[in-house]
Amino acid sequence: MRILVVNPNTTSSMTDKIRDTALAVAAPGTEILALNPADGPVSIEGHYDEAMSLPGLLTETRKGVADGADAVVIACFDDSGLEACREMVDVPVLGICEAAMAAASMVGHGFSVVTTLPRATPIIEALALKYGYERHCRRVRAAAIPVLALEEDSKAAAEKVRAEVLAAIEEDGAEAVLLGCAGMTDLAAALSAETGVPVIDGVAAAVKFAEALVGLGLKTCKRGAYAPPRPKTYSGALAAFAPTGKTS
Image (tube, rainbow, N blue to C red; front, side, top):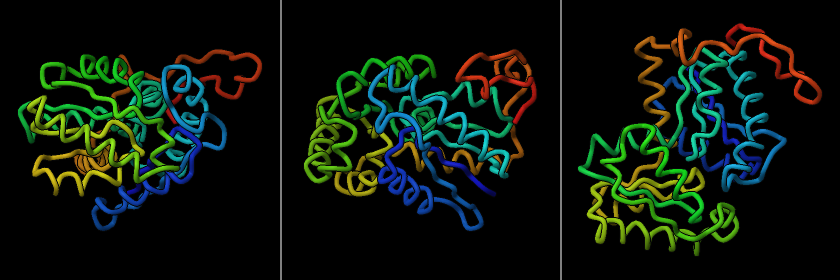
């Protein structure tokens, strides 16, 4: 089994952390291919960054599936481009936010999310509503750190994340805490051990769910919402992205 894990931003050090997490939880025989696009934002902090990351994400997803990936994990807690990728390929495509919320709903009665900047809070709240977990989600908290602080000033950033995790448990009554950024992936195990509460990293959750879906022989439905994009001409710089009507 081969799982493609795509970090939609261009920061390779974050991709390295994501790869380490995926390899640590992958079952024997599961191959992990973790990569990021060459073009796009260095971090995703809001709707504009997300939009500008999508050409690179779509390119890497298409290439990875053509090279034999059995599933795709999008390693951004905004679940950037999730539906577009599901239209484009027939293998399972998982977002780390959706996977983390699903896992949290099974191991605790109510969860909180700790993310990076306050501007991410409404995005994650909207995803909880979209996925049907709004009644499980106690609160979305922001550690007030830029995404790249997790790479450049990791000790100080980790302490701010830890403080919010502790507050989520004590103040929100959260019985699980989700780390709302793929750049936090290396913090989950230590925080779980310290608090005695499941602290869930979406990268790990998505990889394990991907293995399960592939093991069950399930693919993305190509009728209805995730049917291949209708063939048409795209103009100018996006001409290479013109859909053919076929699944990659």
